[in-house]
Length: 294
Image (cartoon, rainbow, N blue to C red; front, side, top):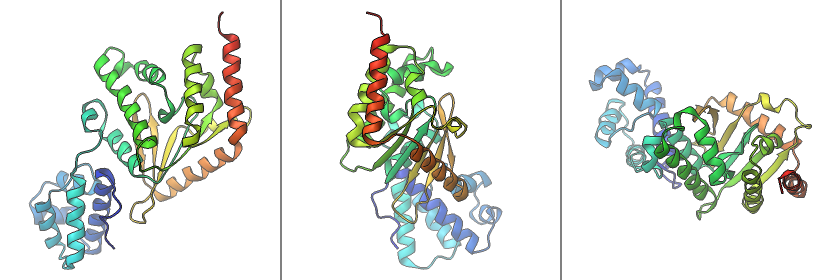
């Protein structure tokens, strides 16, 4: 199988490569220390290549595959192709100094997924945020309260991320469980009315359901997460957990990812969908307008 097909970005291709390299090493009965000694690399370099935190050069990969005694020309070609693809420029590279490496990978997996499923018990998910709401969320964190440049970059990145998901030719399925509590967690009425209008305008682009606060009282115990699913067997599904104030944590363990899939489906089934979801949003908007000062 040609593992370089599918048009995936550098993040996903780097993961494909590291998983294949790890399997090759294990199939040969070699340890990381064996690789370190033979290649004359530092142990940290070997570890970072296998965990995907750095890309491997084509020349280094050739030498490593030779040590692994990989003789199949097609497999060697595919792996070298992955190494080249993994070193391409990330679409959000201009924002790299303002976000963590884990968040950059989050963006890469989101970009390459065929389906995105998100839930947050207290906030509007980033894919639905207006610029004003995003700025409020970003500047509430202590890290960006006094760094206007970083805060502005984070907001623009969030808007660019929305364009990548909703506006580019390659579309993917987006499912969001919107918790009613998130629609009432900000006191600024004008800001929230604009936010609700934006969510309503997005409905043709996604499968959105609204979780009533009286329907799933224990839903907040799940915590915020984003599930990214892929259409290739060589790309295992992943989950990202929101780490406040402004970061994410990757979950790749198959059993844990399966647990989050089940949690999302449970939340999704309990929520109002279709016209019922729209009516809830419109009703909350109407209630906010009634409460607004004249």
